[in-house]
Amino acid sequence: MEFSRKSKVLEKLISAVLLWELLRSNVAKCGAVRLAANSITFSALNCRKHSAVLTDFGGIGDGKTSNTEAFKVAITNLSQVAADGGAQLIVPPGKWLTGSFNLTSHFTLFVHKDAVILGSQDESEWPPVALLPSYGQGRDAPGGRLSSLIFGTNLTDVVITGNNGTIDGQGAYWWKQFKENKMTVTRPYMIEIMYSKQVQISNLTLVNSPSWNVHPVYSSDVIIQHLTVLAPVDSPNTDGIDPDSCTNTRIEDSFVVSGDDCIAVKSGWDEYGIKFNMPSKQLVIRRFTCISPSSATIALGSEMSGGIEDVRAEDITAINTESGVRIKTGVGRGAYVKNIYVRNMTLNTMKYVFWMTGDYGSHPGDKFDPNAFPVIKGINYRDIVADNVTLSAQLDGIGKHPFTDICISNVDIKLTAKPKEVQWNCTEVQGVTNRVSPEPCDLLPRKEIECPFPKDRLPIEDVELKTCSISANF
Image 1: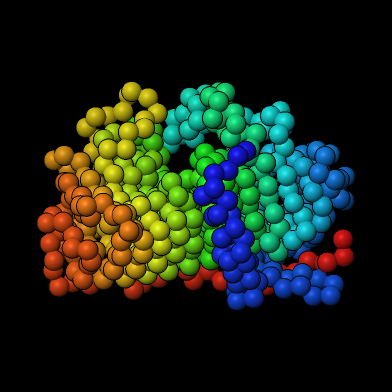
Image 2 (image 1 turned 90 degrees about the horizontal axis):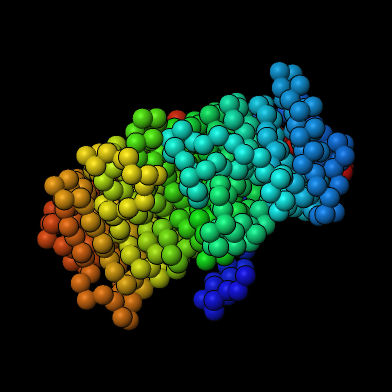
């Protein structure tokens, strides 16, 4: 794939500064993984009594031999000791080509720092799975969808981690198919965990996903931390982390370079999401860095028809990204986005700082309810510094259904050399602002107020990980 000059500059920036700093902090500052002479220690929800290596089940790490069957046999065998302290499967140094495989409960998949799991480009190794009931059809095509590279459903206590091991989706094959309109089903994701609880995804490098990278859906008690997610900035739909109809989720200490939203919070699509009625709620996002020139740092929607509420984001950095936190919705979505709290954002080279869209048009068909108007209220932003900005805000509610209770305080925006003449474009919104520069629109008048941020803690914030170990003798 050819890259623009801008993409190449970004890649140099990533490799020279941000990626190194993140990887260093993953190990040195956070202390999540330590190497000893004969063991590797790491942090996990639970440690396992039993342990095995992929080569015990016929795995061959030459980058050419398919290991799909080896993964399946290994996990099937290890599932038998779930009730006896659980098991962990170690992916040792090497290149491990594989198609989709399913995880099990009370299980840890550990990817060694010198291991690379490679996604197969043989479509026969990606079996179809049922459509998501809250979506009604695939996102790429109305037909079916393909199983994710690492997949799990109805699980309890599952950990996908490593000491910065790599999972490479080899997505260029799928991006080409998509761009040429050859996909009749939805592309696979990198990691998808469904209908599960007690989920941890951490300390990994994910590169070149066919589509979305990390997709927990219909799940609860989810911890996602210390991830490095990389994709070309022109790759289609390579969202970094997409919590979807999930409750009690923690995303932290991660870095995403993406061709789409770095984090996209979702909860179903139009009439399907309304019927399924499972919101995304109790979500904390912190210490997160994003690069995505054509998309958002954090998107709320556009598929939000089950509702999104109680999202708390803080200590967020974005560089050369289209927007900060973007709310995406439209007529037919129904439900709500409410009680959103954002503070301490540092933004550099942005098209927008604030962006709310009430006319996002994509629909799964023509049967959506034209009277299903989303409710957007209780949106709070504070303590934001932005530099090299083209447009401070584009805020567009829905006619006769304005977005309300918007609060923005303590914001300093410095503009690019060629900014838009009008810096705040506002329609159908209501709220207040305080100590905001440039001066906001008249629909957001000044009031002496400090926008709120919750003082209580979500349950997922108090979940502490255990220190576990594996033998380093492979």
